[in-house]
Structure formats: structure tokens, C-alpha cells
Picture 1 (cartoon, rainbow, N blue to C red):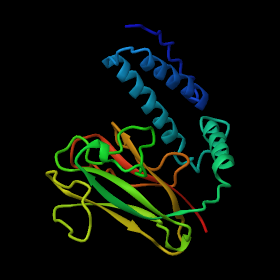
Picture 2 (cartoon, helix red, strand yellow):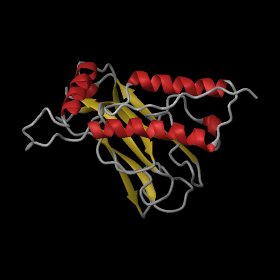
Picture 3 (cartoon, one colour):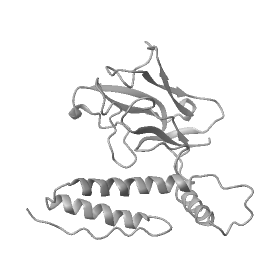
Length: 234
């Protein structure tokens, strides 16, 4: 078995840049291609890099304090990053809109739909992971007509079943979990949606995203799992 050295992870004080992330992940891929064993240390390192990146964009998404007159202090990098995000994403005009989300069940991983909603950092996108019952994936429905697009996505967690909805925890014990799409006239319309899986709770959407659901796994084990989405005004 061959080995390949991994360079030290040097994270700058400010932000972990896209370029540095590319270098790190390319090194990990190289390790895998050289059959380096995925030890617990290696797995922990991969997860740490992933969560550092997510934490970074969550920190950047925090509201700026209205009472802070000194814009050259700690919030200056946040403002600069927001300007970068606006320049990169703000002018995007969608050509299709999310009008619904279907719940798809399976018995094995090979049955996952190709067009399913995926996790932001390529972690597991199987909603019921780690629990008994069916394998569950979410598949968005799109339309070129923005008038029927969703404006929000609510997660309902309740003790009684709802026969009109597809459960996100079919066959699993505990509470019933459902997606409740929302469409309110005059509000921002959703054009992209993905999952965010973390080992800790967060509040609010990361930079580049406009909405975030409550934790889908609330009240059960399996880490924290959110739906996040991008939207724009019409």
C-alpha cells in the first residue's frame, strides 16, 4: 500500500478561500486515489474542513450591528464579503423556479433519484439516514412560470399523521415529519434549494442563501439537517 503525505492545514485568520479549499480537497482526492486508508484522523480532518467552511459562511451571514459606528472594525471583512457575494450572485436571473418538492422512497441507496436535492457540501442527502424505515430523498419540481413558485418551505413535526402528505420519516419511530410548501404573493420566489447537514445547530441561512428551515431532525438523533434556498424578487 502506497502512502502520500498530506500538507499541513494552514487556515488564514480571516477566511478559508475557495482556492485553499480546492487545494485541500484535491489533496484528499489524491490520497484516496493512492489507497491511503481513511483512518479516523483522516475522516475527522475532512469533516473539520467541511464544517469550518460552513461555519465561515454562517458567521459572514450574521446581521451587522446597527449601533456600531466604526465600520472599519471586525465587521469590515463581512461587508467586503457581502459585496463580493452581491457582485457574484446578485445579478443572476433564474430561468426556472421551484414550484414544489416531492418525497421519494427507496429500499436501497442505488434507488436514489439523479435529480434529488443534494447536500451543500456533498454529505449525505438521504433524509432518514441513521433511522429505521424507508430511505427518503427530496426531488424539486421546476417551472419556467414564476407565478407558481414557492416563497418558503416549512417543516412540520407533529405527533399525529397527515394522510394528505408524504412523511419524511416513513417507517421510523417518533414524530411525523412533513414538508409544507408556501407561496405568498409579493414575496421572493425560490429558484434553488439544497440541504445543509451539520453536527451543531445553526440559526439563519448562510451567505448566498435567503431562507433556512427548522431542523428536520429536531427531536431525534442524526445530527442537524436543514433545507436552505435561494430566492429573488420578481
